[in-house]
Length: 190
Image 1: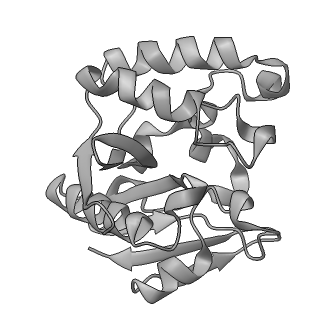
Image 2: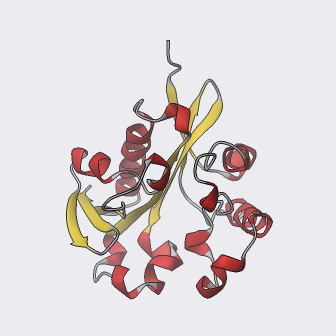
């Protein structure tokens, strides 16, 4: 029997679970992104991202979480963190304003889902969908009217779908808002 999925909003008290997930299973099959700690979208110097170390991103993410500046959800099975979804008001995610291709006119109405990472052994078991449901509900509860995500148009493998697979979003009612070279901006009214 598969353990039930429990979704918890990230709080400073959950920092050890967050770090445990990113230290271990988050990018076990995608080592290129193992240093991220979901800090990419908050990095104050985007041009320097490639030179940042895992230790720097881990420390910075920890500080941001302690200050309540990183929002999202952890999914648990048998009290162990098995997935993460970063979902927050678009205006609180600096990287979205830095990229001219991602700028939108209605940003104040939008909640962004920028990462959806499920440990490999828990994929295709409803974990990501449970996170997506929780994210949409939380964004709506914050008074936002649109959920927006940025999946890859053609991910090479499961590990490359760290933003969540396009098919998950479309099957959940998201529609293409803007198609770019490698990603699509997809939206759903919430």
